[in-house]
Structure formats: C-alpha cells, structure tokens
Length: 278
Ligand SMILES: [Zn+2]
Image 1: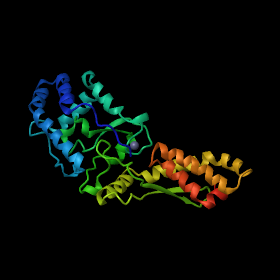
Image 2: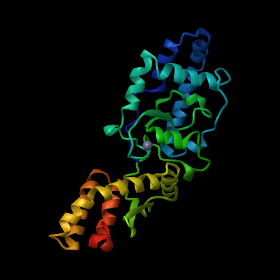
Image 3: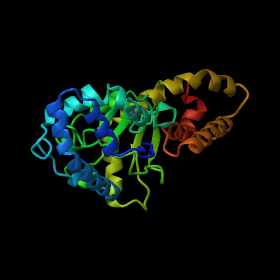
Image 4: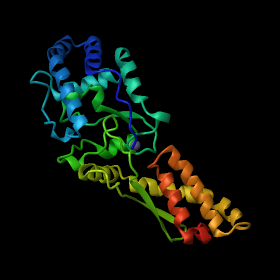
C-alpha cells in the first residue's frame, strides 16, 4: 500500500469539463442542475475520508433524482475517460503514483482508475477526483463493487491513509524444496484497532499473501545460483549477513515492501542460509 498525493483538481473542474463536452443537451443540462449537489457531496466525501469513515457514506440510486446511475456511468466511460476536454484530468490522476506502481498492491503496474466508493452505489462520486484511485487491473477486478459495512472492513485509501508509518508486513520461510515464503500482517502496537483491522482486510481483499508468495518464489529461484556460488567460499552466517544487507536496502526504499519482508525472513532462517536455497 502506498500513499498518494490527492489529485490537484476538484469535482467542479472535472464535472464542468464533462458538461462542456457532452453532446446530449438534455443530459448536460441535467448535469448542470446537479452540479451544486455533487460539489457539496465532494466536501462530505473529503470529511469522511479524513476521518476514515467513508463506509458511512450512504449509497443512492441516481444523483438527486435528476441524473440516473446509468447516465453517470455513461458520463464516466463515454466522456471523462475519452473526451479531449477531460483527458488532462484523467491522465493527471492516473499518473500520480511513483514509477506507475499500483498503490493497492505495491507491485503491479497501473492501468485504470478505480472508484473507491463504487460508482454503481455512489453515482454522485462518479467523476469526483478524490474517489478516483489509479490502480492495476487485477486490484480493480478483485475489489469490484465492494463497499465496507464496518470501519475495519475498509481497504486503505491512498489519498487519506498512510500504511507506511509503521511496520506491518512480515514473512516466514517454509522449509520445503524449493524453499518458499509465507506472508502475514502484524500491525504495530501503536496502531488503533480499526487501522489494524483495515490492514488485514486490505491484505485479504486484494489477495496480497498469494501475490507476494508467488513473486518471492521467483526471487528465491533468481538468487539460487548466486547463493550456491557464495557458499563455496563462505559460511552460512556470511550468507545470512548478505541477505540482511539486501533487506536493509529494500527497507530503506519501502518499509513494508514484500522484498524487505522476504529477505529478512531468509536472513533469519538458519535452515535457508545453511543450504535451504538449493
Ligand atoms: Zn494493484
């Protein structure tokens, strides 16, 4: 999970650009009628986001009885994503993450925007920048239209929450052939109950244990040759020191990267360092 800087534009800008480029005069007229409603809903969203209570935002069918949910979907897919007038906004939101890495899984590449509160149940936030998070297609598919019922079920929102203000991702070595790693969350003591529950919900919903285990298996296979060569001149404790140095470098880049957790677990495992890598 990675924190992102919230988009530098508000819904007044994105909605106005949509209204200006929709050819259907009736729809653009009705969108203009609900503009104030959508702008004030954005403020509500922002307050709930800051308090970590977006699960309390009530869903609605359509926008203020004037624009239907299906029409808002058309505004998003047909106009916001495609129109020349809105492309700049769409592009700016989509490119907000460092190295184009998905902030939800911290692993795959961004390919689209996800509505944090699902568009189908919250049409007023269809083009609200704060509700649009750049994500990879797998994370978007995995989450679908899920909306949390209680605070602890909420996934992390990259514009409002920081998951890197404490260490929560750890791994353990499975003494199998070939060696494997299993990942788990263990939130820091100073995190409250809700934040701790949210990290485990996020981890479960986006299937991060499986994702990281499979990448770690590839990593172990990639370093095997080097470790075997090293073992000809070095005792297991030197191999452990080498792995720990790699972990330190990974940790400096990201406190909760799976690579940091993986290398720490490998360095800690006497079994692995004594030949478990073979
Ligand atoms: Zn992802």
